[in-house]
Image (cartoon, rainbow, N blue to C red; front, top):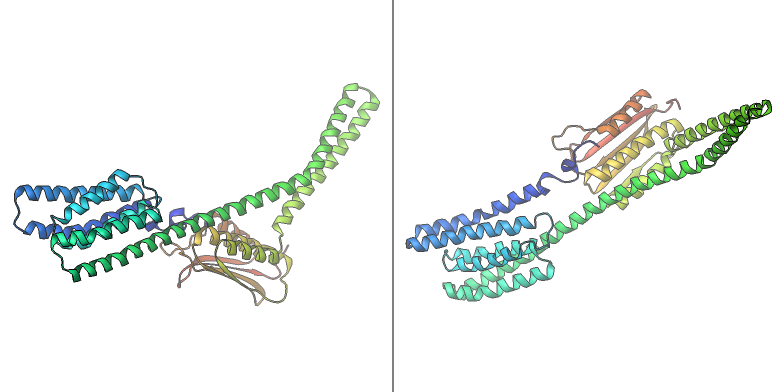
Length: 383
């Protein structure tokens, strides 16, 4: 799962910039009907040419405005195009059938939504809605029709703003989740570096001092100096061996992190990432070797949930099954695109370790949606 590309897991294809541009372009299909109705009417060649030019200009201006702000809503990157779009849209009211008076505010609302902040959006919508009575009177709408048009347009304006607000909130949550995952990795890296420094700092200093002393003794080129230098080199060897043991002990301490600590840490990280976490575990403790191996599986699976799932809930179940301990981590996220299991490098490495200990590890999409990792190891797995 860790090797699945970011577009597949961190953002579905319809959230990409190219997909958004396609959706915005497809919205122009509603221009087809009023254009056909217009062409079926009796108009002079000059009138037809002017109107078709206006329709083409409207479509190009609309795409210019929408595509300019596709990556970040609320940033008006094409102010001139937006102003021209409003003018052309209102001008077409007098050329196209009356249906255009009903349809054109929706295009403007969409353009305002992606280009303007909340205050600018409300002001733009107010100007469009305020111009509707004058335009309706100019093209011959009745009062009842005007009231219906204003009511419908007002509802659409509010709905569009709510949709954009939700989209912005989702984007902020995704950014926050990515930052939480990055900070968690950075915190772990710093903690390990700090512990390694504390472990080796004094030892390496001792090796440096003894090496300098041995070098000076050898430079004296005396029998006693050679004996002392040999003694110092022996001491350096012992200190270096102790340093190597200390490093191994430090790394082993990380690898042997208790399953209880890992469960608590996973719950905190998932909760901080906006993912509700439920944990089910047996009352009795597992053997240390089995617990340590499952702790590594839990850490990798939970990391994938935070980084890739996009889900709202994660369930962690730890239980004894016969002579084995079983760990299940399941989320309700987006799973994988084609329904195939994609374990990735992290889980692939753990699969080798689990199978090497006589256990099994399976990872893949759930039928009800989301992704599941299930690891089972013998209770008597050797340390």
